Length: 55
Image (cartoon, rainbow, N blue to C red; front, top):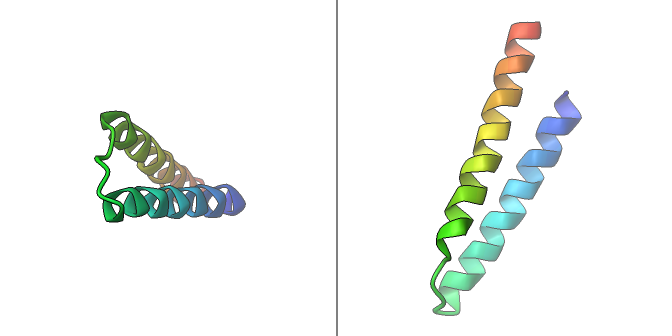
């Protein structure tokens, strides 16, 4: 479970880095990008809750 959380956190950081590079180049962030960020955050939250409950 811990490895899953670490993998999702790394994906989230990488995706956030891509979005930051978009903004620095002057491009607009597409609205679907916010849905992907929300989904990754939801996965992390669900994983942390499941891990906390299982302990």
